[in-house]
Length: 320
Image 1 (cartoon, rainbow, N blue to C red):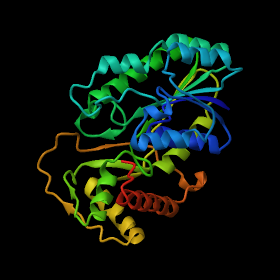
Image 2: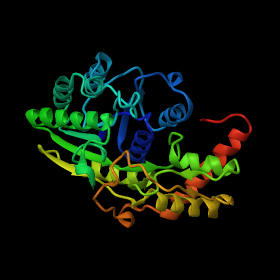
Image 3: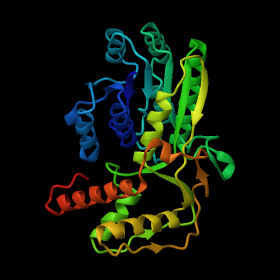
Image 4: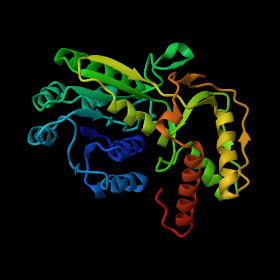
């Protein structure tokens, strides 16, 4: 297929675009900024994404250059809209209205232009932290203001694709981890171990759905490749390691200890505050064998990534 892909500078976006290209699709990626407009690990992802296929920079969803790109190209098969406004996404003051406007800017015109070029399918990335997604506690409310914006984005896409008679597919992401991720939980663990410290897990009782990003990317590409062209809606919510965060931290520590040769000790705090829903997980099992994914290899690659990263950092050239 010829795929128009937004959001390849993000952690999961880079992996999704990479897997789509590796299985033979022609992937045209749009970026809001030029390469030198990105910093740290995001810049590394963008530089690696340039090797996957054609890229267009300074091209935001729904803006003039985006529309011109659609019009100038001879035919499209699929729009993969992975980009989303994530500015201050953890803040309670996250601007939901501004994010919705950015995520869906000029949407009807975008869909009409794509249809004129033969495209009948849209694949939208969602999140388990949207209202009503996955399974869990607290009535499946939106996890945050950011989650609220993602849910409203999905509703807007559902409305306009139905009006246009297009196929809408939604791919719901749980908690991915792996190489080229921002310095979040797993990177904090590894950094602490390299510094000779014992990292603390402050929310060991929260149940989450962590998944190797390499596996998630294979599921995404497989889902994208199997979408029918007729109008309608379908959704996939792939699940990985469903366990409390203490259990996942121990799983991660065991696999890094074996490969990095570090003690990889943990301090599991006694959790007394539950500011977030206790349980939030995806519900669709993944057939790893059919996809040709190797769990051992994924752990090996992750350990090697961190080994190289922290070796570089010790020389004063860290990526994050």
